[in-house]
Length: 307
Image 1 (cartoon, helix red, strand yellow):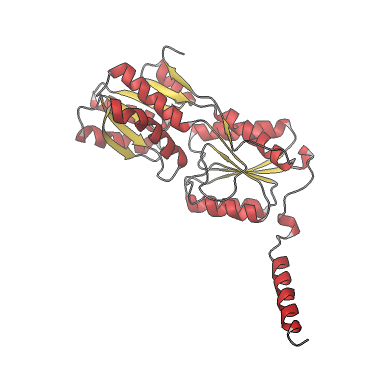
Image 2: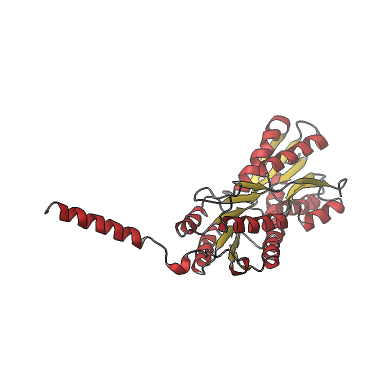
């Protein structure tokens, strides 16, 4: 009997500990799949980029059409702020989290926090490295990078000297677009310089100025997004050089620049469609329906000829 008592005490303590790990009722996602009762939390990497504004608009339009509420937070390209933002959304009792990560590694802790409470997570445009994500709604960034490289080869021929403006270090879109670009460029182009400009127009301008000074024979630029591409064009125009520029996203400013004969091309995404599909995926998960690991959104190379 004396041997049994410690064993029973240990089992009781273990069960008590397990119970204490259960999330409080207010933090658990609603099991009611009535769409009008669903609250969506959307964390965006930055609303200072037209692409992500359009993505947000797509989320809000789809949610509104189905009577759902959306709470939007802007990480302002700050990975630490985004983690806090997501924790705040969890505290507000959202039923599903839609996250557009600033940094794919850093956001993992916030994803895991949601996982521990049973809140489904859908990522948009960029993935999370760790934690359970129901699905990633995104364009095929690697394929898009390849499209950009093929366009440059077609326009300038093999061996052309190219500069590359990279996105935010740590973002999956940066890695994937760069990987796709180099799948083609490493064999058929001469990438003489590459540097991050953090998906930002002003940084694109400043970085391009430096690259032109150090590499005056650059023939073209591939920028991982349109904002950097548009900044690069400003620097190129100020230098008086004739350099072809390819962006990525297909935002309104980029399309206008193509029509004006400034930006040469952009690999266009459909940000509003990404937002709408993410909402639908989140609802499917809440209803217990299976969703694909990734939900692809088609890309299109836009040039003055295709407009």
